[in-house]
Image (tube, rainbow, N blue to C red; front, side, top):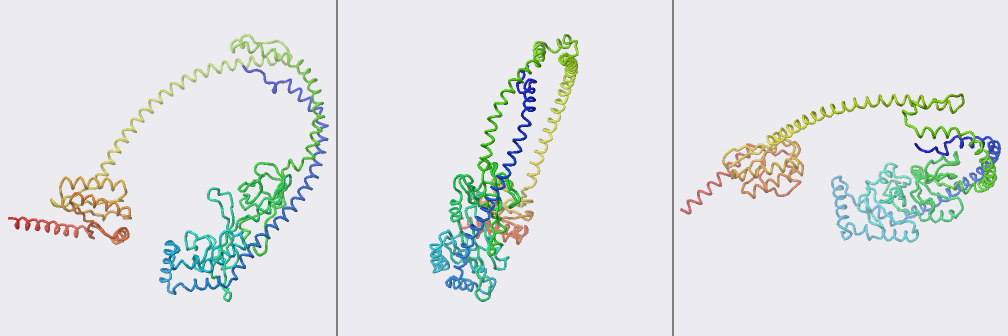
Length: 570
């Protein structure tokens, strides 16, 4: 039996009761005072960080407006307009010819910059203009221009594909009717929660018709935002964070690095406190808002968060509480001494009863433990006596029940063993049946002494192809036939993988001196053969009848040549 734990003893509970009755009134008054002071200080701090959040959100919005204005100034370049006009008019008018021209551009792009079609797109005057723009505005890491078909016209960093019409931003520009700005976050491949930058996409409109001529794409890193936040985020000051719509920090501070999750995000100024990375903080939120960029910014949900640890903000109240706790500790010590003396006098009989119980077993307690008296200790001893009688009776019933359960388990185990043997026998029968079915699904039919027919029924997968190759080669070696007719009429799907299986069978037959003829060729099978290989190493016929006639002629021709050769030698 374990010793009596001090935290659960009656003595400890008496001490706690005396402590509560003595300290509760004083503690209640002090708590109300601290709560009032905390509320006043909290309102002042929240008001300050809300103003900071709104002001700094406006400053960061201004940074993006400046980058948008810089990128818009590049669209007004004459050389950019002329280059787009030349690229858009280079597509042939007919649809088929235009598609062929697009395919030619893609092939030339993969071939490299040395191709004449790509030379101007890689080293043309517009590329030099883009590099010059990057030197004036180094916040743009990459620049790219496409025509109205989505094909790259010029770029400072060449993308993998010349056709950009499949990109999400291109679809957005097309749906938007060629108007407005599109922003897309760029995340690190090895860190999906870390936003490294943003793609700014602006449609280029014709100066007269105002129809889309193409799109200008700029990759913008958050260097300017990082520099601005570094000025705000000084030690022992509220920290300013730039957060995206998924509540992930895009640009922050050493305490809140990029990718940190902002949990429990409040709605603007309607909530004062929340949890940021499992730490209690005071928090204010302000969204980025700009009239010209509002449609592009709203889907991203970017906002500025100003946070301050609650412990640092409430440091004055903390110091006041420490002073009160020091005085309360002295009072508590005096109360503990008095409660200890009272507890000893009350709990000593109970400890004596517990000592007696620890020295006896259950049956002895039932027979001997019974005290006469009206006090609490006697009442407790008699209660223990009754409980011991019930436990002893329950143990006897449990032992009988355990014996019955053991017998039931033994019987059930024997039944399960018999069922397992039956299932094993059924599985063996099923395996033999499957082997017979596979053998029947690949029959070999001898037509003549020099010709066999192998019909294939069902899907020709890798497992069946290996089995079929083994069966045909063994049959050719055994019968020494000259022609093998492979009937693929019953194959529902004939894909490039099936063609490779047929080629492997043809090669094996040829190595053993037999010639393979594929019959049952449907139009879709013929199309697959043509697309897969240019030269077929076997003969193909549309029906089994044509294959048999061709094979008979082939065999007769071989025999006639053999007879003529023997006649000439004689």
